[in-house]
Each structure stands twice: as structure tokens, then as C-alpha cells.
Length: 109
Image: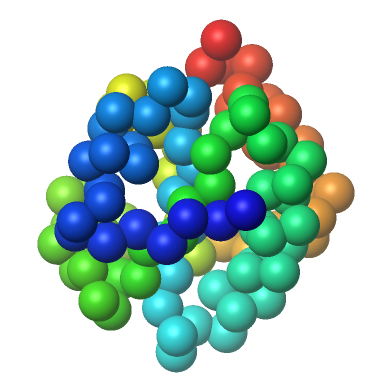
């Protein structure tokens, strides 16, 4: 399951999350973002309970993209207790993205 982030739920879903969070910064006009969405959704099922999957529209919430210095999308930002742990920039096919996530999770533990 992928959580849609907003200004109202960002603090609770990201900063106060008991588990690490991977945030997909995306925009509706971004072709690679649209390609990433189904891959991100599929992988969210594989990591239930280990990693929270969330997405944030840079069009609707540009202030968050600025706060995290997001300069290219899609950008997957991994946070723990609201602090950046790592980021994955650009589209990845599912096997490649899964491997990237595995590598990031090793750093988080």
C-alpha cells in the first residue's frame, strides 16, 4: 500500500513513523514518474511492515521538494525518523529498484 502524503499527514506518516519511509517525489507531467508508479506500488507489498511506501506530488507540495533539495524526479527519498538516509534518482525497472531498496535497508538497520 502506498500512502499519499499531504501537508496534513506528512509529520505523522514520515517524521513519526516507527519504520523507515521511502517517499516517491513525482509529478503528473513526468513520464518516468508515471512508469515508476506501478513498480513502486508492486514493491510496497513486498516490504509491508519493514518499509513504508509513500508518494508526494511536487506539483501540489513544492515546499517539500525544496526542503529535501529534490532537483530531479522521480526521486525516491528514504527517511528514518524524518531524516534522509539515502535517495534513488530516476526510473528503475522492478528488479533493479528492489536491489537498490535492499542496499538502502542494510544501511538503515
